[in-house]
Length: 268
Length: 268
DNA sequence: GCTCAATTCAAACGGGTGTTTGAATACTGG
DNA sequence: CCAGTATTCAAACACCCGTTTGAATTGAGC
Image (cartoon, rainbow over all chains, first blue to last red; front, side, top):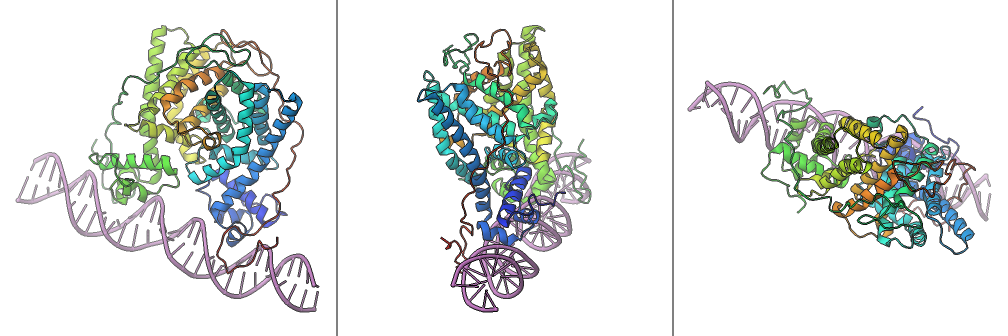
């Protein structure tokens, strides 16, 4: 069941892309080998190089395909809303729906790989690999400019820098939710709620609350109506030198090994 | 400058842990080899196996060391606040400060590796590797239980399930911010604002706003005072089948290669 | 000073990696 | 039907991986 190819009828290039996307999201970019990919795609290893040129180029192709779809949907929705608004500024909620709602909608598409790709994208946003992050940033740039401007217009009284920060925070919350692998799931006891449709309304409500939160420092008005209460002076969190908790208490030596019983760890 | 060991005087075991942490955060767990680690730590490859037993066990040790410090600080702060409250419930803001403020404070500690570890932790929260995520979840469990209960008490009118979701969203926002690698940084033009002390007040304000946002569906009161306006009916985001944007337009063949000029890609 | 365990070391092991090769096959336009 | 390109294939290449080995080195206790 694991060796099956997703769409046996598709051409080799698409089969490789599909297989790569599925394996990337399951094992990560580095841990997925071309041999795993081509085996799953019922293709030859050399075929991958023939169609893409290198593993890096294949990774790029996977993200280019997915991001093209996501970007197009997001821009189409933003265009529609701005057309309806007739030149006037959108509401913050509308901008968020066009940006995050669209992504969540795409993530709800399990059949055409949208779910898989959005999960992959969520995980890769924090990938250490400089190369792929730079590539994603470039593919995102045009869309981000549009949405940044839309948010600036929607929140005229909020400093642009603050809006950018909150955009980042919102993106983090969504990426993390879409990644669906958070280590806290087990710790907090959330069952396998993987369906983005269940997450969507909750996440949108959370994001809107965060976006319209009072500015740090003093209770400032955001947009037309924000919660007037509770704007704590939360500056200068960092003071006092950090204390170093006690070392992890001796017990060196190796964990598991089959050396000829060096009898470490016997030091009591 | 890159081959230097962080603390030349420390013992081999600590040098390996430090080198591993630094390389993990820069290249990722999979892409970092034991040879890279031991070379940077001025140690022999076999020494790593002698002290830790395997690469997986070394990874565990790095996270165990960092999480022990983080967990201790978080619990100490929560204990202190609950003691001051004398059995009564804490304010939501206090719980967030104990959980996220502490993490951000630790992340501001560049000298003792706190910054490095928190960045590593942020990236690993969405790592595809099941093994390490399970391990982190286990190390987190006790702390999460405590903070979950504190939030339940702080928000008595909010369903527990909703609180857990928002806890996840908040964690995503922070992990992403701490990871410091988000691909959008380049796209949105935020300069190298890496200092967690600059992020802290902004993030705390955002998180509090998200936590206290009105529940999705109908405008419900959260805690003692939440924004009464703007509680959009944001249900059922997903309807209408997804449209498939035009394919990426022909142009197959290889990207770069030095085959004896198979003259692909010449098909115009 | 000697003993014995703890630690370090160079070298090798088997296996998996991305990539390349040159030939075999499939396909398509004339 | 045939020429010529596009695609697939098995095999090999050089390299790096985590792990193991057995000997050399160190260091503390008697």
